[in-house]
Amino acid sequence: MTTTTKYFGLGLLVCIALMAGALFMQYQMELEPCPLCLMQRMVFIAIGFVCLVGLVLKFSWLRKLCAGLVSFFALVGIGLAARQLWLQSLPEDQVPTCGPGFDYMINNFPLAKALSLILSGSGECAEVQWTFLGISIPGWSLLFFIGFVLLGLYLLFARRFRVAV
Image (cartoon, rainbow, N blue to C red; front, side, top):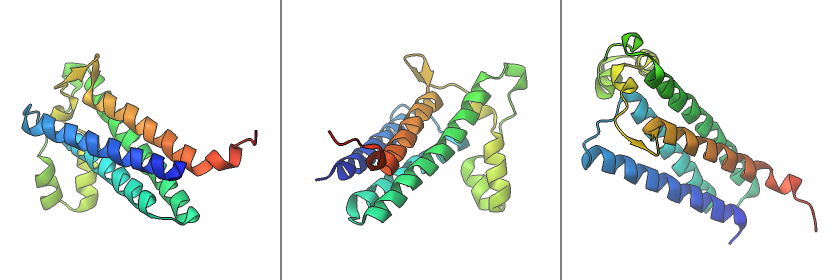
């Protein structure tokens, strides 16, 4: 088993664990995810899927493509998590009002309008429902997305910079 295979496998396992944790928080701890949280979940699912494809593929150039996609999706996730952290940092009088739910937006608005509404955030996105070590859920997501960017970059460029010893 190559190092690349191990790292894609590790990325997949981390994504599975993150989704299991998110579902546990939603259904056991009864923490309702906001639209930005749901978008971050979708990004973790996309990263997990790309890691699965990279794990299965044996062609070097396709694995490089998967590594690049891991970094790309993780950068999207960084933007989403940073937006939510910004909303959480706003003073209470500047927090946007609560908007319609994620399902309602996706089902009743054109995709571009729904994405615009989701990304603008709402009051529920600014609410800190849970923390661990003083870091909220989008803070932890941001840390994992940064880790995935680094993983993707490592898988993309590691062999070019390896020094023969």
